[in-house]
Image 1: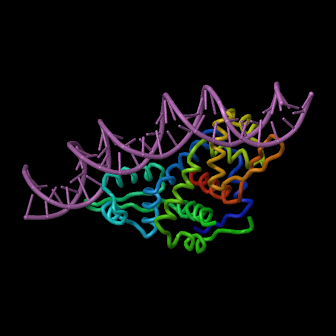
Image 2: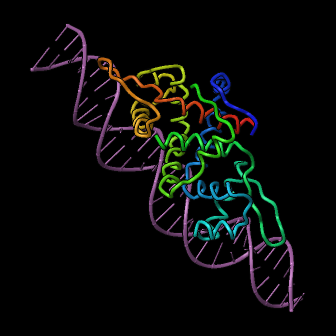
Image 3: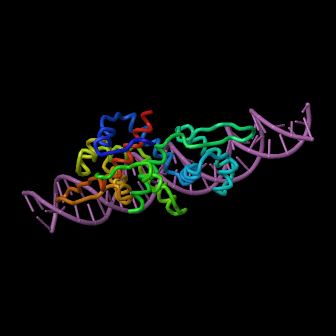
Length: 109
Length: 109
DNA sequence: CGCTCATATGAATATATTATCATATGTTTT
DNA sequence: AAAACATATGATAATATATTCATATGAGCG
């Protein structure tokens, strides 16, 4: 993450949005708006993990985790790689961290 | 918005989260995760507006808007001020813009 | 090849959420 | 004070969502 975000850049980003883009935005935030998925993302802040490890960390049912991983993957927030029987998941890019960090900053106030 | 967000700051922000904070975070993002609410926030990027104006802009039922305004207010994303019969709403702080801008950047890729 | 381990998927149920309708509250005007 | 206007609120119905259970797929191993 080399970039920094200043006021000018923020204002530029929020301009010119179509109805469709607003829907996509809401869809994206909806993905962040679930405790299980936030926990998974936080878990992956530690680095790549496979499904079993995530289940152990969150103390949750494997099926529930797989379902949520799929949603995160579809939203391109995480990516996956197979290694033998295991499927390893990791964060797709740094936006995830920035978005969550901004959310955290708001919540903490 | 005087602040800038660099990698060090982001990494610091995402550390040390309790289970409760993760729930609060998910709750916050859930608020962003609805088209109507995102549209309202976008509408308020233009500045303070009253309920009737927001209804007109979004072409939506007053009751639906009021219900969503309440959710946004409870989450401290917007604030309100009464002027005669009208109630004026505006963004509570700059986090809203930053969070949405980051979301938009992700969606656009 | 059959077995076991790891993960994915489909169906079903339980729960949450949104918009609408009807109505209440609060403010100004006449 | 009654009427008109602006907003809020409660209940309901329709829809969406998450988890669970059962089972399928896929990979390595004896």
